[in-house]
Image: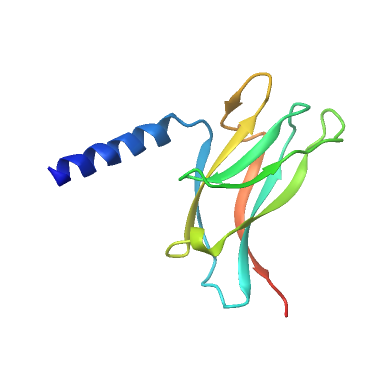
Length: 128
């Protein structure tokens, strides 16, 4: 009976995750972290519609950050932004993120490759 309940629970989580809007990216650290280092995800954004935001969260739903590129001239790329990733979200030097484009008036969806140009993990120094 416990196996059946565990299977149903896992299936419910899978359905919930599959129906969530956004693009899932699986990233690998270039190397293991030292004690005084942290991790951030670097997102290079292309041209976005005015008022759009990029939402970065873990695949389990933990919000890591929201990028709101206001003041960008129409037709210009939004730039490169960095969002910190807590160490507890990294497992086996990997992290899975869901990145969503929130167009307030038109809802949420996965960003295109023109809107989200690149995503990569960077190692940051906490400095002492």
